[in-house]
Length: 385
Image (cartoon, rainbow, N blue to C red; front, side, top):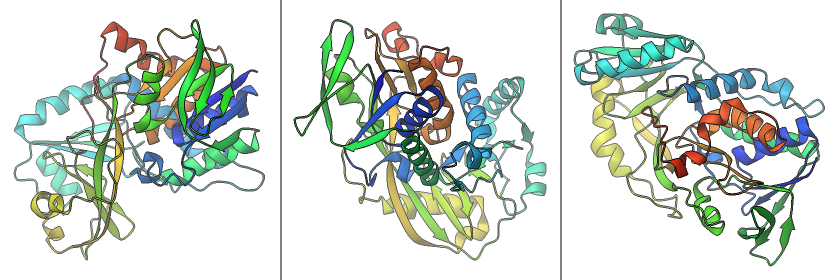
């Protein structure tokens, strides 16, 4: 197969490279400007997986990815080295007051029609299943009974990268700055060190930094970095069988061993290359802690052990990933803009991108084609956490 150049060595680029090299015998070069991945969304992701989406395409992607994660030790083994991803499946629990109950019912009907194992619980049922939860103001909860949980995302990223290299892919350290083109084809990538990398197909998978590469091809990729803060909490409270809980306020929490991880929606402003050490501690003190203490009274006694911030690669067009061939080009592709669900969908998207580049069908990502930007056909995802 031909030479494929993947720009971006995070989990989406590494997955695409892995499947191209492993399944299709492609010669793959991955161009990554920062091999430490210190600011990459792949390193800073909460690494959760769910099927409670509002779009069937997202349900299908996460379901395929879940199956892959369950067998990743075999799929991504290199010799005797079998990756351990620590996948657990306690579920997601969306909570709603009267104002949001109708939406939960509508979504549950669609999700169940797509085979999602989800149940609606009234306040009495919620209190019986989760006695540590305050339910007086709630009307309904939507609980994933199976197929939802969390895993070690950085371990998945490392496993994809290691498997790709074992199958012949090479990772080079340089920064992509532009392209050489001829008619409707990209012929080479230009890099900041003055080098050029020629190839037969090119994939923009640079996460929150994909938009400038799109502009270099005369395209608008509406992908922006939005910062999200995650707080690591110590508490003596015990929360048996705790899923990932999404409060009606938009704040969320889940267990991580003996600790609690908690946070809220990404910050509203586009931050692009803003420093990640700027943690919004006021968000926790003024907004998050009061919500947690009200929803789980036992969490009134807690302290912040640490915190981190990471980027959502937010697609402002419709909050869904862009995956497929770039409009106007025969051999240029992208996989970016997944708006917070890229880590969980990376196995399915990488597998599908590899098939598409190899000239095969890729039904899982048909709905995510970047052509919808040109056509003005948004595929809006309502369930963005």
